[in-house]
Length: 117
Image 1: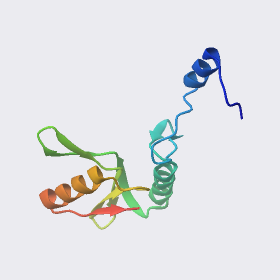
Image 2 (image 1 turned 90 degrees about the vertical axis):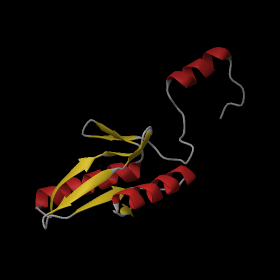
Image 3 (image 1 turned 180 degrees about the vertical axis):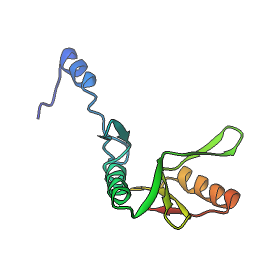
């Protein structure tokens, strides 16, 4: 690996978008949808298979919940089961302090649990 770059080499590096996520997540695209991590994309593929097999009724990508004016929580998925129940899913590799606080606020406000995958 090269230790020193000239200006042009650095600009070319920046254009390629070779930036790593703070927590190592790699953005992944499936079916034209971009996910924040490979784990989230894999879970989406699993949900698609479950939907095709009739195991679930449906699912929703990235639903947004209003916690307070100016404060939102965006889950990764809502899964709708055949028995009429649903589940809020968040695929997490790392739980930030912000996520933990929003999760607690969400669960208290809506009286629902977030399932972490």
